[in-house]
Amino acid sequence: MVALAVPYVLRSDFWLGFLITVLLFAALGMAWNILGGYTGQFSFGHAAFFGTGAYTTAVLHIGLGLNPWLGLATAAAAGGLVALLVGYLSFRYGLRGSYFALITLAFAEVLRILANSAEFTGGGVGLYVPLDLGIANLQFADKAGYYYVALAFAVLSLVVGWMLERSRLGAQMMAIRENEDAAQALGVDTFACKLKAIVISGALTGIGGAFYTHYYLYIDPGIAYGPGVSVEILLVPIIGGLGTVFGPLAGSAVLHGAGELARRLMGDAPGLSLIFYGVLLVVMVRFMPEGLMGVVWRIRRRSETQADA
Amino acid sequence: MLDPLILLPAVINGLTMGAVYALVALGLTLIYGVLHIINFAHGSLLMVGLYGVFFLHRAGVDPYLALVIMVPALFVVGYALQWSVIGKASHGSDQNVLLVTLGVSIVIENLALYFFTADTLTVDTPYVFEMIDLGIALVPLPRVIAFLSALVLAALLWLLIARSDLGRAIRAVAKERQGARLVGIDVDHIFAMSFGIGTACLGAAACLLLPMFYVSPHVGHVFVLVAFTVVVLGGMGSFSGALFGGLLIGVTESVGGLLLGESLGQIGIFLIFIATLMFRPSGLFGARLS
Image 1 (cartoon, rainbow over the protein chains, first blue to last red):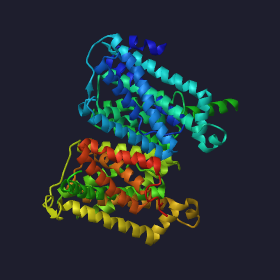
Image 2: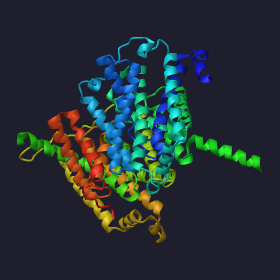
Image 3: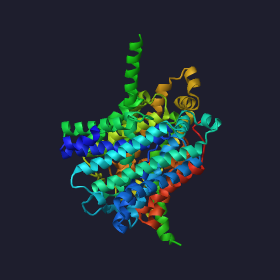
Image 4: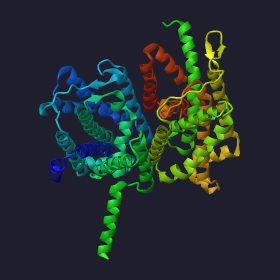
């Protein structure tokens, strides 16, 4: 309810833009979290799904006039399809841990090179979505419209995560994360289960890519498939807390809040906010490997034991 | 078929570039072989080395003479990095190491961007355009030097690991951490030594590379995935594999660029990478550092 009222209270475009970024990356972070946090398969190439979603809707909208709202759906399908391919090839051949991280990175690079060379993606120049304001066209005169779409996307991702956590599939995914061989020995079809996780994750990430295209009205191979996106997506749940429902939201808020603060304090020099992200990543892994949610739990547990005593 | 007059120079060109890839990959494969970690910061540490050589050159030091300074300097950087940051933050988990080295590389790269801006810099030396006539093709002198140095460096590394006491300790740690600790080897020190030596290789690579290449904050990206490909292809932890893999990748890229054009040519590297990971993750040579 509070989230719905925000645009009426907060009339600043800057802060709405900030919230849109936070919500978009919270949703993307949750998508990564489903595969990385719950299932324990760290992907370093989520840009493969993000970029595919972004390009699918851009190409279909510009070339065939497909409605952007339907574009979000096709982007989900396309992201899921690429995820199915990547997942099938990697899991079929038993790639785990570092090897899985590397192969996802390589797939994203292959797609980046293809997008850079192909004709219909506009090559290195990228694609511009023509300006045509209207709700039917997923283009809004002010940021409030985009805010609601981003909010809906974040809620969708969080609900998917929340439902997964309570489902049979979710339990199997967590069993794989804790000990894959043991899970298999207990009769979990680990291959099918990991495939489902990566497809759900890829489909959600594809929607995020499509939203990005229609929000910024521009996409190019470096933005869509570059390593920057992959890294930003994985930072969110790692900072917030792996395998938790609210971790990605907390992580996204802290990450982008800190980035914004760095920009405010030290000026908008190139690379500055990224230095901050990198330090944050190292510090989190060093001192809070369970993320922000882990800290929240620890505090809650401590206060509970004190209450008992 | 392609005219051999076009193909042969492309192959030679690829072999010399491949030698540089091999140089970069040698350090990476050593770090993997001992610590069993994927070092994402490898490319950015190479970038640090390249800036080092660039500023030394500006101060009047020839890039090849800079070897004497850069190799020990990067050894210290690598040792300190593993000792103070990576080892401490990893909590013994491979995935944490991935994240920490990723974080380190983001920091290094963007510090460079902040201080040196995104400009692409090159050095100007009298011998840059000097050519060596190999009968079938003219090859720039720096490329010939890089090629020969890669062979020498690979041999030196092999000697160090196979023949010295330090090498014996490194192999012991690589094979059996607990056992090595029990017989009195300081495992954390050996980890840091391995990381330092692997980074020192980058110091050498930077000195040999800069006369024929450029430096910018993002130059590491060009090499990091290629180096991973080389390491995986050659077999993680195998020096001869890294050397052979580097040359093969160099030729693939060069010939691929000739057939498919510059931007699409690189795709061959990644397809090889994906195929190797899928079908032969232990690499062509498969041998571990043991």
